[in-house]
Amino acid sequence: MITTYLLIAAFAYLLGSIPFGLLLTRAAGLGDIRAIGSGNIGATNVLRTGNKALAATTLLLDGLKGTLAVVWVHAYGQHGVFVAGLFAFLGHLFPVWLGFKGGKGVATGLGVFYGLCWPLGLACCAAWLLTAFTLRFSSLAALVAYAAAPIAAWYFASPKTALLALIIAALVYWKHSANISRLLAGTEPRIGQKKATA
Image (cartoon, rainbow, N blue to C red; front, top):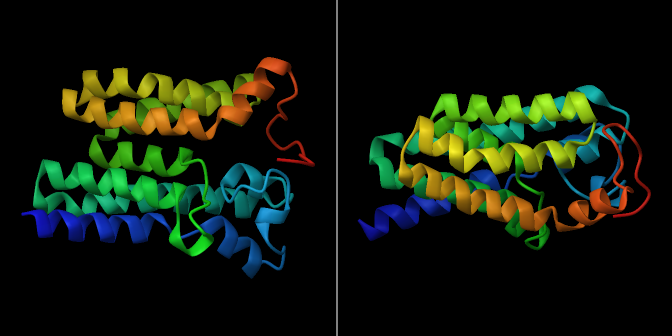
């Protein structure tokens, strides 16, 4: 059983660690996304290149890797699914290929939630979209969505799912510590606005 879980963790981590934002921007001839804007490899920073289609593709693929990790491991049972979801998320945050310096996990975490329980994923995505379109802050939208995640997980899924959502949410908040400081200071850039420094 332990060996099975280790294999699941390794598989999910490697899947989650694929840096789609970096790969897509390089393939499009836009250089290294880590040298643009915030230096993050996620969709929000890809959007700062001005290529909306590339940003949307990054968002979709980063989300799908979280969903696929959960769906593919579903046959191993609930605990295996939780391991897959967590390690796919950790893979995005700490990819071995990039010196363990990855993204903030927003899309991948939402993908994990969708794979675990689609109403949970839908609720969190709705919270993100409503906040993003209303206030135009990607970071604030993520914070609102992930604040709602453990509550939605408890309601739509189970206490164990809520615990996983809480762990993922805590890591998302940690990765957004600089964004939280800028939001409080009123200096956080809005969606689509170029950002000169991290």
